[in-house]
Length: 105
Image (spheres, rainbow, N blue to C red):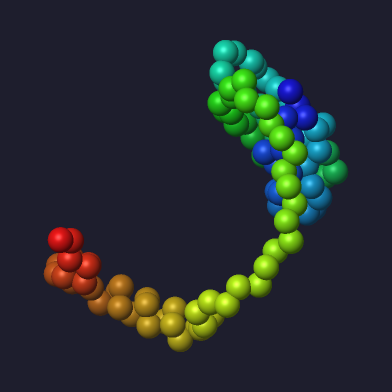
């Protein structure tokens, strides 16, 4: 069961020491039909991330297929000026703020 749960945390790392989570990072506190109560902690630095309720079913968990990331062309990055402009726009909204929302047909 822990091996299946480990897949949920494979792409995450400890916010303190940046090490990945292992099977030993997961402690099953309680198991019922369709529900697990687990505790997640870092085996490297000991940081405890608390308790999580995980819904489970009988589906098999397959190993994820790792595909290389592709660089995609997109819009220009948001600049500091863009953030300041957005802040000023939101700050200056009044009771007629809904007029700035798109019209629904």
